Image 1 (cartoon, each protein chain N blue to C red):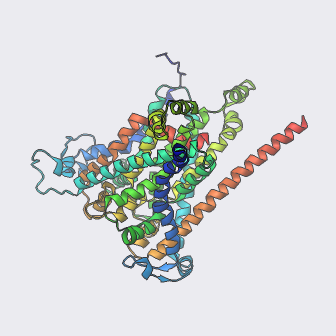
Image 2: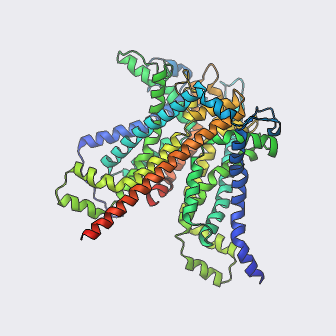
Image 3: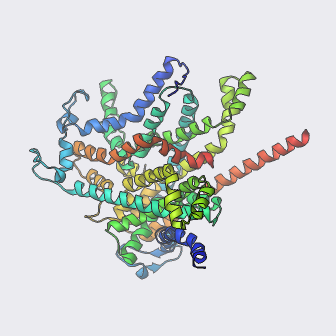
Length: 290
Length: 305
């Protein structure tokens, strides 16, 4: 790798950088440390950095997955474990569905010149304007009385797919436009049908776009609270819903709740570190390229 | 012949699933909401049993002091939050647009707050604002100051909610404006430097005007999202104390689930949607006007030559 040349900066500048990083990451670190503390340590007045880290809070939250007997748990509350499974299923399935459906639609819009890019951009923006709170009443009504899929995972997945589609179609479009048409023509000459061209030629070329779209969809489905809260019943509750339920209780168990929060935050944090470039591409694509 | 037919059908086959899902789960609910806003409807009724009451929900809301209050809180929250974030985000971008080691690490760390679930963001801040175990009051106490009622006093609660949102979303503005800055034409900057422009002059006369199109889009996106904020406030204050932090999204969800007035909640949703549509169109119109003016000026300048 070629050595890059960096400008020299004065020390105050570095101090500012450090302060910014502490501000950005501090609250997350604090959540992590709190989740590793016993309640005695959380409540004590002594310094917040000196404590014995413990995994007890995580053991309490995940008690139904433990393969060993944790001595401090006398009653296992399975709510969180169940919610974690629900969240995983819902987020993964809706991500896969959104990508497949969105990819096909984006391809059709680009290659068969249905509507201009402007129309799609405009409708994406229009959809982005609709707050989830606005969908709350109608989705609750329709899902309960007409489709009768309230309280099921499928019902929640359906809303998430619909909510994410406009953005996914729009971002994938900007990647598909860049695939040279000659490649596809060559494949067609060799006798590939439209579906083969799409799956064997186009898809492999737009992997970065797919990664960005996947992360954004997963994030929305994994983090969403409002609609999940309205649609889910006891068995299909997702993690955000259980977290909100447990903070409305009178006596908050900060250690355990921070552990559940941390578990909910871990997948997005991993994505950020693995694919920050794709995330930034996805975020800036709309505003900067126009 | 058969392949020709298949080829003609392909685009429709590719589009059909997306069109179907969006029609069923997005457009239909929105249409349904508009219809429901004219009904007197509670969650135990089917929609057919609900009574049609015309514009009663809309008119009733206009004279409802609590609704007006929460409408005002929403506007105030969006205005304050977006202004603060734009100033901080653009300022930081201008400051950090340098050739330094570890810039990509910095950007990665800055995205974290946006990626984490809003519920969790609310949780972290609620812990930090906690009256006795929270870090803010602990620090204040150890420095000998009075503890602050972060979440239990109306105006402090509003400020606390704003701080949490600024923490979460300033990086969004920062990253977009940094991308804009780094895609500016080098030649303009060099020309300015050669002509002896100071740092400030470069920022005010070259960088900011050239970034303007991106900044306007960024502002618009952030503004739209500011009206959608719900989870963080729900976890932090649940709209209280009183109505001091009850933004419209929160009021909609409470009207639907606690007061069981689906028709009224739908009418409220419509008001929120109308507000957002007006804002978006105003922004678009402004953008178009600015572009048109720039084009006219350019033309006039060419004619003068």
